[in-house]
Length: 147
Image: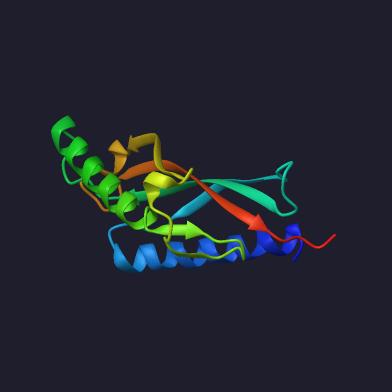
C-alpha cells in the first residue's frame, strides 16, 4: 500500500465512525471533521513507517437553558459521550479504525482534547444551539509501504 491509499482508507473510516457516532448519539447533527493532518516517519531502526493522524471534530447539540450551570452540565455530558466513543477506537496499520486492542493507557493516542465551545443566543431554546470542538490524535505503527 502507498501513503495515498492509506490516507484515503483513513478518511473513509472516519466517515463511517462519524455515522456510527451519530447513530448511537442522536443528540448531535452532522458532525464536521476538519484540520485532517497526516504526519509520516520511518523509525531509524525499522523498515516500516508510522503515521500520526490528527483531526478535529465539531459537534452540535441542544442546551435547553443558557445559564452557566446548565451549559456546563450539557457540555460535561457531551464530553463524556464523545470520550467513551472515541477511546474505544484504534487506528490500525491498514488505515481502518476498529475496536481498541492496545490499552489507552499504553498508547500515544490523544482522545477528545477540548478545543472550544460556543452557545448561539439567537436560537434560544431551539435545537442544536451549542457547538463544541475536540481534537483527536491517533498513531498507526508498522505500516508497510510500497517503495
